[in-house]
Amino acid sequence: MINLRGIAAFLTLLGAAVPSHAAGVTIGVVAPQNGTLALLGAQIAAGAGFEIQQSGNTLVAINETCEENSGAAIADALINAKVQVAIGFLCSETLEGALPKLKDANIPAITVSVRSRILMEDALKNGWPLFRAAPADGAEAAKIIEIILKDWAADPIALIEDGTIHGRELTEAVRNALEQNGLKPVFTDTYRPGQEQQIALVRRLKRAGATRVFIGGDRNDVAVIARDAKAENIPLSILGGDAMRAADQPLPLITGVRAVALPEYTVRPESAAAADALRAKGIEPEGYVLPSLAAALIAGQAAEAAAAASKPLQEMLLGTTFQTPIGTMAFTGAHELSQNPYRLLEWRGNGFFPPAAPTQ
Image (cartoon, rainbow, N blue to C red; front, side, top):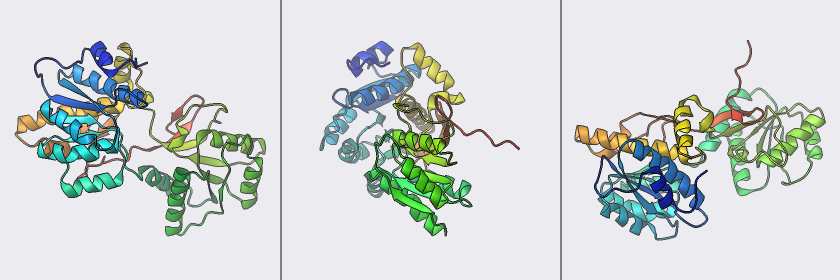
């Protein structure tokens, strides 16, 4: 696990502290070094620091406070350090203030976290050099809708949600898409979250004739609903969202429950070598570690290609497909990932995995 006494100490452990002279590509890593977001910041620093060290590049670590009006000072620090590209950026507050100055300095920013659609719209309108190596706002709903329309269109569908803002908005997006495609759910409802049992709910689903149910709620509520449906001998195919990626407690999830979620990169074959190398350094490849490693790899390769071709770095980011430990990555002309990173996954015993292919 990552030592949270501070990112600086961690980078020293990696041997990735900033040297006295520049080597290779100079990459800024913007991440929280203290406070409530220090754990996530340490994950970003861990993955990025590992890749930057392996590639022989130079790391400049910049503390991200995520406070309003903090971005300009962070941009100044990156500019003064003469970085060629910056990655990380956990918070939109940082980018809002930093991007205008980074534009003037021709320093692209690759965020591994910020999903705001409005921020990217502003960036494109103003020519700010923002690239998103994370899902955009709405990507989760888009993938859920794609899966339901592809696999469930001929079946009686129920949509239920827990009344939270995210659960309600996610389920509403699915319902609107179904209606636009001429499909009407046989059952819709808002359930009370955090209950020890949901027998009445699953019986209502049965009476409505539902066989497929999308649940806009957290993992434990889904586990309760799945358990009670099984106990009542009510066959339900259950699909949840990215909130399913949570601790499998207090009630374990039943095998076969599905989720549209970001994949667990450590179980993917293309991630195995990087995960093993990280663990050999005492780094657990969790959370933002592998995505940040990928962002640092993209930053370094794009900068090297730009120098070799005497082209702007932004041009190389837009015109290149990168092979990374979390898969093939490329940016569209809108500076978004060319492929939606959300995947259909199935719970099998101790983790979410791609669904097994149906037997012929």
